[in-house]
Image 1 (cartoon, helix red, strand yellow):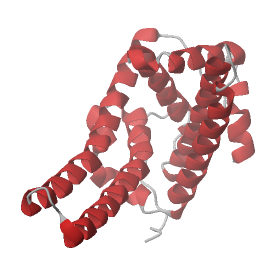
Image 2: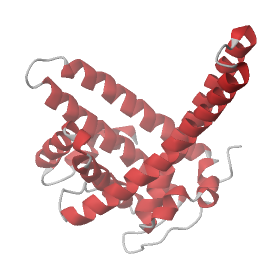
Image 3: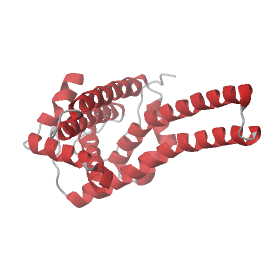
Image 4: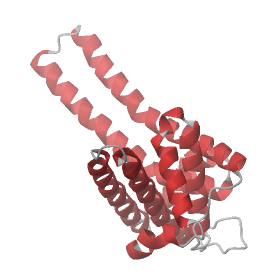
Length: 232
């Protein structure tokens, strides 16, 4: 799957145009609207690959891209808020109880709180791609955070393996992007291009896996629940 994922973006008539646009949008992602366009594109990637379509989409139908991307932004925000709230409550509670001077026991409690917050953050990162895949298939905002519907998929070894592969792709892409970003003048753009390519590649893996667990055809718009035995 990794080889197919790495070559996926080339399976388009406008591969270079798509990559350059994606990189530019990521470069200006601080403006939010370009970032929404990127996530709207990712939704199409996941939807197509889940349906067995190996041709990468292009940037078109901008209004739909923007709306889908904004919805993904809200989904990701919801998942990001969970560890943020947990960390704030735990740390704030400890500081409140200790009067701002935690001492040895307080420092131990803060350390445990930090690890708990990190665990919740990793859990949110694990669930989020599945939420995006579910949203891509149903185009309902609530589908992205429907934990009851996502749970069977999240418990499979297939999804866990795909998530690790996708995470590895993003990490390597981020590392290469960071190196390229240090190059004067064009470094930032080159880094953004690599980051976009890595993001698309990672979500190809997620979309392909989602399609395996929720078999669909190019003609079908719905999904079927996975029949794989849970990994845990």
